[in-house]
Length: 181
Ligand SMILES: Cc1cc2nc3c(=O)[nH]c(=O)nc-3n(C[C@H](O)[C@H](O)[C@H](O)COP(=O)(O)O)c2cc1C
Picture 1 (tube, protein in one colour):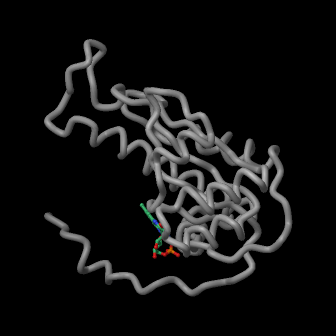
Picture 2 (cartoon, rainbow, N blue to C red):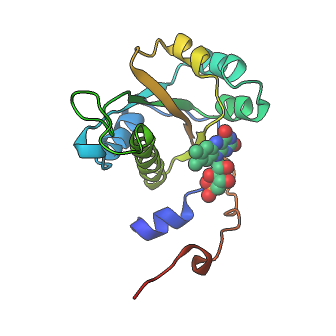
Picture 3 (cartoon, protein in one colour):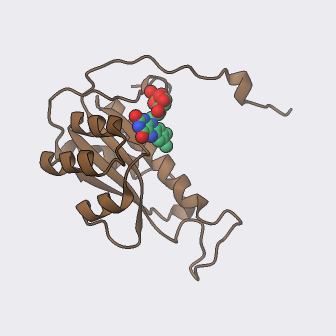
């Protein structure tokens, strides 16, 4: 698939077919996502992939802050990837001091790039995804035993799409772009 077509066609998928996603498929996606750029190539993004249905259902029931739509999204998907980042590296000097005035901003920045790279790679391989920002971090940390020193940046549902939603309306390019010549 052409890159520009992939970027335009990727959609957030909230209904999935009842078809499993394998560890090999998730590995193939992360093989691509690991080439996402990161702060000083620090590569602090981690992927915790839940294929186990019982654990995924517990996350859906207990880890979505009662935002029931995300509970349904997670239940519907074959897999849930919990994207984390190692704290205190992206944006910081080895002595722990912030390199810029933006502090931990760069940690989130790296997570976002990696997250989109993951979703585009999945789309290229025929899999749908949904990024979710509404989740109960302490509960999911506990359920997945996320190591201290890693923060959860986002959840990503993964599976075979059972819908083909239209793109939500985008602003015109002219509203977004200032060209200074
Ligand atoms: C940081 C972030 C958090 C999001 N959180 C949620 C969420 O919790 N639940 C949900 O259903 N969609 C969530 N979305 C998906 C957006 O609603 C979606 O990307 C947007 O409506 C554009 O649709 P598209 O992805 O199909 O282009 C999130 C997207 C991003 C980038």
